[in-house]
Length: 107
Length: 107
DNA sequence: TTATAATATTCCAAAATTGGAATATTATAA
DNA sequence: TTATAATATTCCAATTTTGGAATATTATAA
Image (cartoon, rainbow over all chains, first blue to last red; front, side):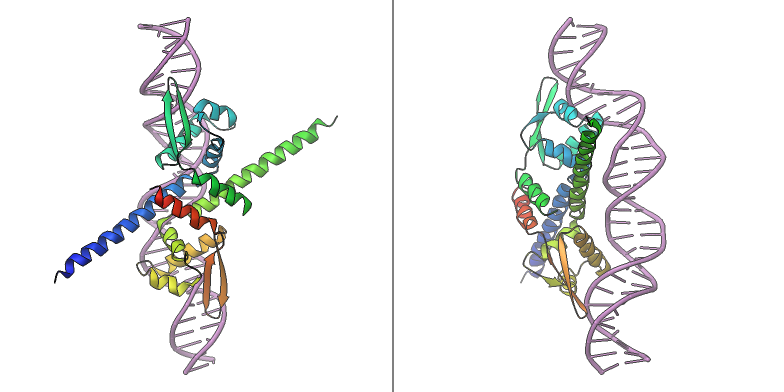
């Protein structure tokens, strides 16, 4: 009877769960900043190029907005598309829109 | 013509928006940690007392779990109820359950 | 080619978060 | 009262995050 193989399966399952919690936490971490949330909300009505976002949120530095977009993209929340000099960002996880509007009604 | 009063309204609106983004960020910050997410998920099937959560997640320190629950409560994600020596926690924001299950399918 | 517009990256000091260890609080039972 | 079980709090060094300032990259137009 190979008991150790069962142990192997259990510890593999445990590792998968733990890395899943870590991945989820990364998504929430990307959302845990007011500027990044404002940048994200800027994209609720569809794809925009970085320059458009910068001019809408003119109170923040260009570098700050660029870094915010990249962090949201790395977490899988946004996707991007290059076209000449411009980079267009859009939402890759539509369920975030519903969740944030739910939060707003619960606040 | 009282232009300044319009400015007043605009700046008030801006402040409300900014504090809302901060509040939202606080909620996401509370969710941005693997242990807190695991504690939260422990409550998906309903209210539990702290001791129950501790014995389910026995790999973490009691103090760690207690701090996790308090942080989630302060963000408005959990609520609690005392009964004798026990404290029962439950989810105060049901839409989080749907969102997390959506995340899991998108990962 | 060179200038320029759009975007990304690096550097970094200040601020915030992390989780372990020890200790405190509180309610109940003996 | 006192012991104990359940939960919360404090302390703290290590790690991570923050955002401003300067600089780099890249694609296009002149």
